[in-house]
Image (tube, rainbow, N blue to C red; front, side, top):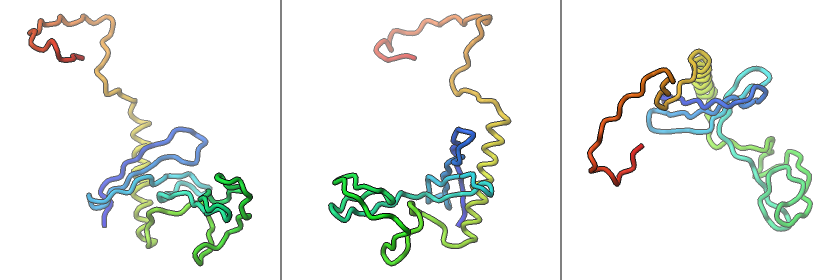
Length: 160
């Protein structure tokens, strides 16, 4: 398995922990989106895509976000959340990974590739000024080119 492409989408804000999102392509045939680049206490790290966990209200069975105090459907009080056991395992967090590496070697490989692409994106964005993809705006001093007359056959078409 090889990571064949990494796309980085930087996020703005100097004080934010979330620095960027990444999209990974494996072997030119499988894509994983919403991989996050996060600034932690020990530096940058990569977090896998995840979803917020939900649990059922004991009264109405409505699925509420983990650690909610009251049910969003019936308003009844929910049991206090204390690393509850669910399906035979103790749930430690409010999120569960959608996709994640099984081995440490795979996790390190993914993190290395994503952080290299993130560093390259940072260097690219700081070293080159932003250039608009639109047509350049002529300076007021430049002469305007004379428009050529066009045949009348395209009168119904919208011209930009």
